[in-house]
Length: 421
Image 1 (tube, rainbow, N blue to C red):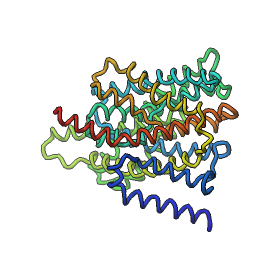
Image 2: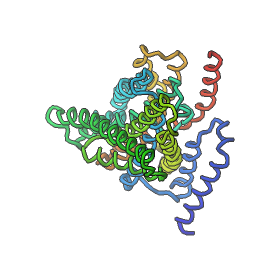
Image 3: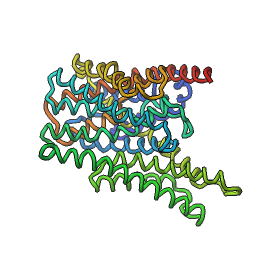
Image 4: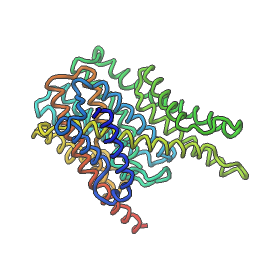
């Protein structure tokens, strides 16, 4: 039978099964990502051989697939976060995405050096594993755009912010490995890869998201134009923000996240003004934001399926070495808790919220993108093999451990919160 036909049958059956059993599955300690991961392993060369992509020969293709997945998820995360940007709720995700991430990078770099990597290889390992995931373990994310629970808001915001904030450290690692120009004394990295690329990406995304949202709302409300086609408008904004950010040598991930966040902020401000205006018609901004979010969440699920199938197909028993397991367990059980406790001690988190934030540092799609990016940009040999095994094993353990515990733990957390209030 033709391979394409086989693929159509397998993917079709998988999507239908997940769709029909989703409500029932949510009651079990098994996340959809774990199912996709197992299906990818069955499709890979270790079992059926229907999916035979490898990082060595298909790194560019994998980079593009995971890149698209991250972009969709980052835009969706931005739309989920409705709190005003000056709200104190933002303090915790900002700290987690900056200070906690830096501490994590430092600890994992030290672990990599202790395990025999060069400085460049150790920094690469740490940078690839630094971002938490905005796609997986949806149970710990905000439940809707009005969810103001500090834990869920913080974990969701962290996943949106640090997928872009990790990029400078990936570039630093490539520079240390001789694959990227850092400049004399590191000036290029500090000035361009860090300051300009971060600030520029944020500015481009916020500006485009604000202008786009206000323009569409105006056309719909005042001119009765630009009606419908939310999917086209969404993909157009994501592509435009990402393309302009890359053209300006800034980080497109940050641009797309802040474009989604700006759209939500426009909707929130527009609704607040409507509340003060008697007789104002139904808000075009609220309808647009909801329609766009619904579309991106559907596409996000397809992106999750695609990436987890890829990860599963790359898995081999040989990857589960003592060294790769040491990295995965060290990150999950040592580096993440230390980073969270050390960075959030002064923030208004309860003891339970701090413990859960320390546990739910999910790794997944973002790490897979950065791994593919590094290999596509010249990382090879023993360094590539070491980092690849460690990252794949970390993603697998994270999906299994975090995915299996998210539903019961968050159910208990919600019950305890309701009891206190």
